[in-house]
Image 1 (tube, rainbow over the protein chains, first blue to last red):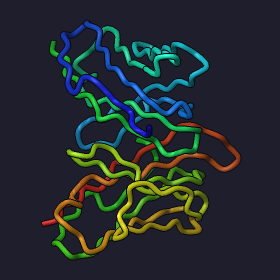
Image 2 (cartoon, rainbow over the protein chains, first blue to last red):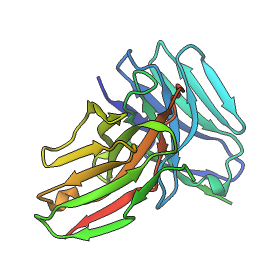
Image 3 (cartoon, rainbow over the protein chains, first blue to last red):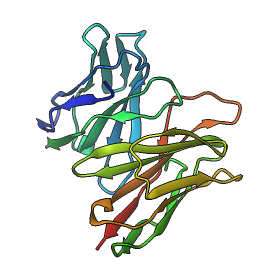
Length: 112
Length: 115
């Protein structure tokens, strides 16, 4: 119940394309769903986050789509750039100061 | 730069030894979280402190302990080290004094290698 399942494990996208990463959860008590971006040798950095009261949130080229009934959420990266090449983690928590439960990560490579 | 600092950046030690990892949260943040990142287990929550008190415990081994000091910095102590403890250890902080925030800000991590 505490798991967050993430797919795909790796993703290769052409520059300008759309990158889509999916996550699914079981625990209906989860109330906060962030996405973190991690570059090699660095700590995870918050990219964008959503709460279950909205179905979509967009910040620049990054969009989270949230399906509460299916218990799924996804990250869409529009116009993917080589600089987006990193590992992306979805996560979930029960409330805003709770521990984060992370997905297994997706390694994104964007080729020029 | 997240504002969270961790020292040391790298640590190489032998099995059976004890090490201490240090974390300074963002200025004013009351909550500190420790996470372990390994190739086979991914990013896993270890323990959380809030204003000096232990708030939550995750998959933390009995050989590991942590504390948060009055100045809000935190230390993670790992003892009787085993090869399998080799990993990246991240500290994150959140919740500024008088504030209410969702975001956990992660430090750059400490890479621990046990030989």
